Image 1 (cartoon, rainbow, N blue to C red):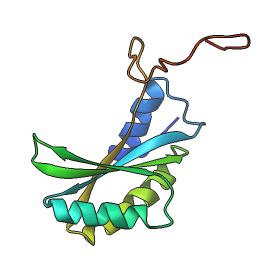
Image 2 (image 1 turned 45 degrees about the vertical axis):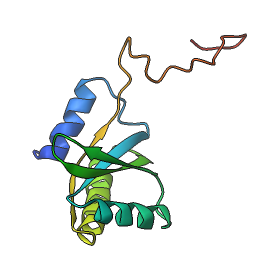
Image 3 (image 1 turned 60 degrees about the vertical axis):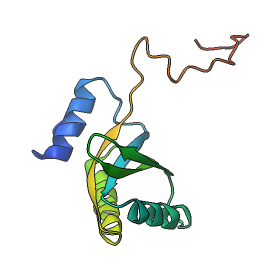
Image 4 (image 1 turned 135 degrees about the vertical axis):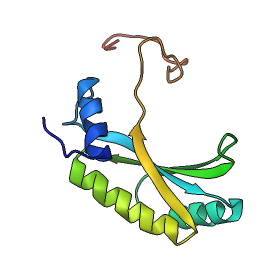
Length: 128
């Protein structure tokens, strides 16, 4: 696969190289950053009350001392779709004195049990 020679293209190429199946929808996290807590909270409230799909989470980054609003959208990891979502979210963040700060995809790593379902018991038909 060939990707454009920019940050987004490089990220997609790295995902493909890492074995991520780019032909399947993924939860893609877009990061919006705000200096002020009230701006981040207002943006969060407006996102929650909008008709936009996806999940949102607000965190304070102690290292950067900034508020991060993570917008997770289940979508195909296609270059043009990512550019469009990133642009739309960048414009949205600017309305609240924020900026967009890229995107990423969480990957389950071998031995990483953070996402393990502790309540799950394997039974007939289980695919583990």
